[in-house]
Image (cartoon, rainbow, N blue to C red; front, top):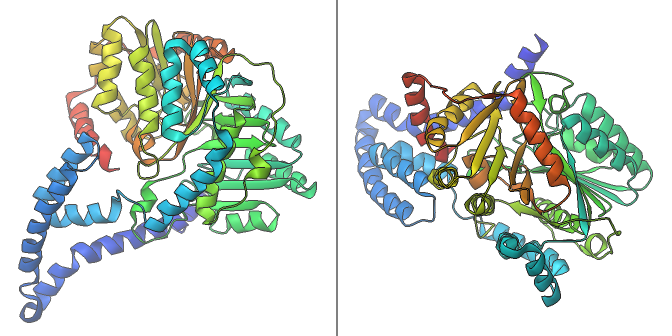
Length: 516
């Protein structure tokens, strides 16, 4: 009863009501006025139809000439041409190809301030070419598109469960001496957060600087409105990413989906885990929750500091002095391979769709095997064709998705992708015991990515994400063992057949995924 009351009278409910009222006023009001007051507003609807028909042609030309992905262009053009008033109104409300000039200017200034700390020497570049060989281009792409460089003097530890990850995270938090930066899509009050908060409060009392940033929309039905104020009163510098308001705005489409922690510039954590009890199986809303992450030590942590400071300062609308956080010598570590933590985000802030291109680079160069875990498999033609082509040229392509979903409709849409991939030779598995939330790729024992990037439109096009590209690091062996275990305890979906009605519904829904 308490949970029902919370949902009915929570912030999300009031926001949804406000948004629906705005849409109702936009679409319904002209018709109501013309019906009840024909002498005054009799020609209003006719005039609106003519105006929106002309605008529909203008918007269609604009969309076709934009850099929007083809799938998105198609559905927007159909919607605007057939339902111009509805289509144009929604497009103006929810699609913003360019940010406000002041935001872009601030982001560029912040990026310039931070990236000057990670310049590369000619010697570094030549060393990387020697080590990476034909994989050099994959790391070079990340540098040219994000300004984040690759490191050899860093180490990565693979953490195969949420429980293992969070125990390691809390141990390192307890050892913090200077500062702690935490950036998470979701924070939810419960046993896990209570432990972390207790540690953060202790660290603040010891003089450690603690910053926390969470996504306001991601936590809208989990945290009270004044949660960030409570943390600030405790001495924790807390920021809500894109604070959500009832006003319909395209800015709400771009969420901070990153999950990472940085401690003293020496240790960094990156994973699929949010800070909530289900991620460490303290509660079981969807069976056993399977997630993974990594712990990074050494110089590569600097990339994570850069990503955090850039987004944090944009939200605070100020540029601070980054020297205390970036002008330091990382401790020497026993390292192997090459590591590059990287960020991604909406194209109006990043010059490229970084994450999808990083995935495509790995898929297109795969030779022996390509193994993937993702909670959602809603991919465009480029990724679908790349996966199918890899399988057809003899690469062992395997994808693990959940068997118990967190969203039933999304599972149906995910399963509607199986047929095309399986016909090309891709092997699909579903994690039998529950929900697999880890987002990772492993290829040929040589290269891998662990991070927050799902194989779906929202992750790849709209959200701020993070990942770590690794070449021949020791942790890839642990990743491989984890994958091999997954295949033995998961359901092989060979022969799976979705009913025609369900498949048709999902294919129709898939048309609209670029709009979401």
